[in-house]
Image 1 (cartoon, chains in turn orange, purple):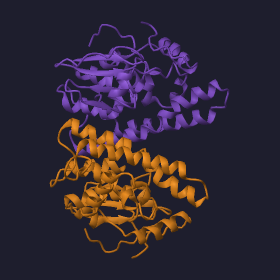
Image 2: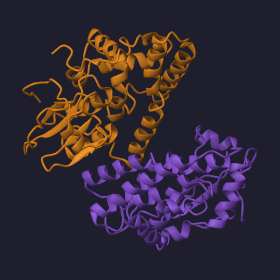
Image 3: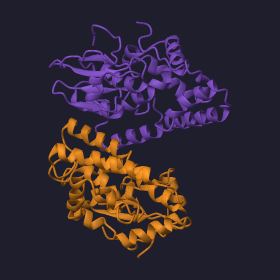
Image 4: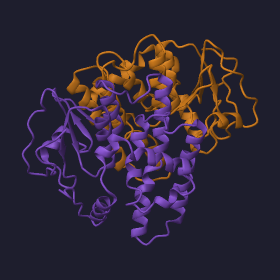
Length: 241
Length: 241
């Protein structure tokens, strides 16, 4: 999964060549939590891939030609097939590639993971609203209470299932789908929202130990710098390179 | 798929018994377009099922105990498994039951249908916003232009693919996922938005001929009465029974 340069490509850059026959390409941005979902699946399954990072403020013309929405993650296959939207890219990778299967094989097991993801998608906006509210000097205690309540439900879910992870006693797809925002919790100054949810906290501790998580992570200090640059309207996509 | 009564069950009603061993149960509402997606899949695949209609304004306690979100469609299996969110229910039914497969078998084919659905999910709100705006006496020409533009993209998709339906020359899952709002187009007074999109219009004509569509449809006059009752805040869930 090495590449010549991790630096992002912007408007005016030359388009990368065709995707090599034995690889899949991911268009990503190093600090994007949605792209990280697909990067986690690539890492967990040991999929031979190459990464092209995109300047999300000044998107290359050739990238918009491939995906008019200009979203990361986007996958491109050697046949030129384009796949986007993070859950869709993750399911695709899990279906196509051998190695550890991350989604359950039973239809009901799959449906359960999709329902959990649907619930989780209502948690995600809070990870953006709270820091933005703070920056604007708003009272965010209501939003924090909301996040704590959502964390409480996730905690309850682990307690009820008596399992370490959200799909059982080993990591499955839903854990990787939820993880990227938990990795940023300290940088977002939201760690205290887990004070009342010991099982959820334990889950984060186990997740930190996962090799795929370790392969895709950035440190809290790095996230802090990036998030600050992002909030200031000048995201430093190449920070640390 | 017959049942004793189609009348909806409300707060205070007695809970239905366990789901018979050879059936699956759908909790539905006769005029709900999301529930209709699952009803179309049940009909298209000829799945042996029973229907329990829910009073969505005064939901039965026993229904909220099964699904705290109180959404339709919800499926219940003889084992007591609960599945909700319309795309999740439809995928589940397609995976579990024999008969015509509605989703493509290839991972890329599946990913394409999921991406189309994602795009379509941005069209759906317009079917609600425009009639609501009109009711409020707002100028809805901007919203109508937006709907026409979205219809234009759908039309373009059919033209590019040179296919009758959105997944090829026969009906697949994505067609059923999109259909329910097109069935209501006349009742919503939005038919003129298809004036510039002949291939999309042709698609609706072919869809009207489909046996599953015929089995699940209501007439425009019925929708008009229901939508009027809905807009007035007193939805007549049992209209026509």
